Amino acid sequence: MTRAVLLALALAGCGEPGVDGDAFVVPTDASMTDGGVDGGSMGEDASVDGFVDGGPISMDGGFGPCSAAGEPGVCIHVDDCDGVSTPGLCPGPAAIQCCTSGEGGSCDPDAMPTPNDGLTEGPGTGGCPNGMVRVGAFCIDRYEGSLVLVDDGGPIGSWSPFHPPDGVRVAAISAEGAVPQGYISGTQAAAACAEAGKRLCTNTEWLSACRGATDRVYPYGDTRVDGRCNDARAVHPAVERFGTTEDWIWSRLGDACINQLPESVALTGAHPDCVTPEGAFDMMGNLHEWTSDPEGTFRGGFYADTRVNGEGCLYRTTAHSIGHWDYSTGFRCCSTP
Image (cartoon, one colour):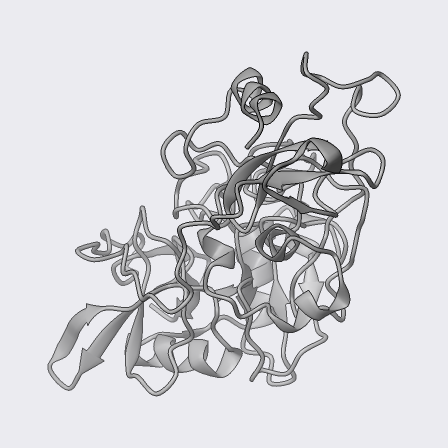
């Protein structure tokens, strides 16, 4: 990179991805709903004061940090970039683009990382099985589900939460500190719940657990509180992963590296205030959650949008069959005590 780009990165305070948690993203001025984009959504239009009308935020003319395919960069004029300029990731004029070295991110989409190795479910409440909490007459998973490989004797290993469980036998678990399983269809989620002696929640059960007896709008109350849940990623993860807003990226939403980007899916329980009074976490944001609706319904929104198809607990997507999956589709199970 040029000296100007390196200075801009330093002024922006960028560290290494995955070490200090920086997302290296800036808001875009584009938006896209998820009702026809296979479960992904752009969220609301966003802007940052000072980027366009107020001038650049760094002394050398840079427009702040960004990321392309997981590689940190800086928003700068294409003429000042001696690496790779990626459009669509920065505010301001079209010539201001995300400049990276071009060496690419560290994610291998064919790798099968298993970050949930060794995690176990905590005790249930109110007579519910491990990992579950009692809500009225039924039990629901405390956390969004992750998967373990099983045979007739029980668990035999962890499954990668970044890959669909095609052709493998898996069971659902609800454990704190897990990367929840995305990339899962409604059919696969139902089978994983059944392997665990549970079932997918009905629409009524899911709504009852999220809204409670008072029919609150959000898991925690009737007023949205920014930052309580994982639901406000500024740049759509597919745009960041592929470095463009062109239509072809919406056919690549099964890419395993999308949920491995910084500031994407969060560990279960990592947002301690995004919880219902009964103790169910992340029913708003993080990942969409399949219900047992045979026509195909997932609820709650995901980490870039909990508004487009309804607010908070009322968020609902019905655009897909139960065989659909992408990076944003997750699940949790219910059972009868």
